Image (cartoon, rainbow, N blue to C red; front, top):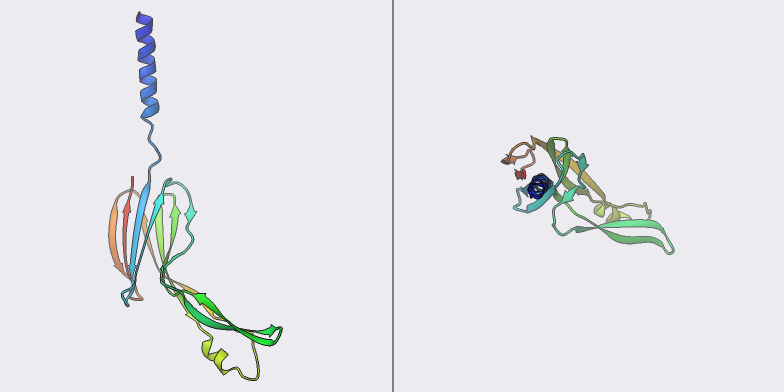
Length: 166
């Protein structure tokens, strides 16, 4: 009988320590960017392990891409005009290092060649628009506590972010 109690007590204590282990903590980062024109961009990232080094892919605003002209001169019948869809506006890249998160605010723009292509009549030069990605500002903070901030950036964007550990 004492042996049963002893066995039950061991099982109870061991199972308690197994169930007491924490599940991986999740960290949530919500970002909102507002442009001077009134466009808003929202995103949310969830991190499950704060000790990993992670570079996110750049996240861009979900505005509809604009079409730009391009021309290729070596087509079967000479010059071929076509269009390229590129977006412009705000974006972010999130860098996650040890106990720090860096939000890189990015601005996408396009160097259009539409006017150059329109003026080509005799001579053809392969020409297409160029996507430009400028880093506007970096916001850095540690992941030890909940934080909510609003930052006005140099290009007129307003960045609002909320970080919540656990």
